[in-house]
Image (cartoon, rainbow, N blue to C red):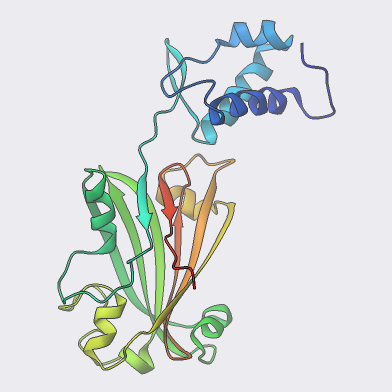
Length: 252
């Protein structure tokens, strides 16, 4: 029996099995102990045992099958390789997301909606414009093997793109921000990415088909620059169990 430490027992049990999964003691598709076995091992009620498994399931670590039990989830992630992600490509070339999926033998698709909006104070600051200035917002949802794997929201100042061939990000001849901006004489020369983690907002959990509670996401705040002037900023959001980030950086 685990001695009570002040942490609710269902979280203590979840922590113990999370450690076993992360450290490889329990491998993908291994079966977890039944509720009765957890009750015996930790001397807890069935409700406590069930809540512990619920925590692991909400974290994306286990999957439960009625009548069969709970198993360590087998996860095949898409790798987001940032090494050459922002190199210049020919107009109409494959999107980075589609390339990421293809490397792991997966299908890729996405849906998008663009709309004219007024910049919030936060977005205005990120774009170096005034609050309420007009922007084009494009909301994306990306799928791999028909499963939602990433959502993002991109904003571009209409003072820059309005009335041009690239005003609507997904309706022009070029693919990607760098190639699109090249078409209107704005040559992107740097991109910043700030990566954080947080609990998923309800809307994000719904769009990504995540559990309503205890779901965490990785967030990349990305901005494209021409010199010191931002020309696009984007929030990219995905569950850590479906995507992984890789970076290869030069040593100077």
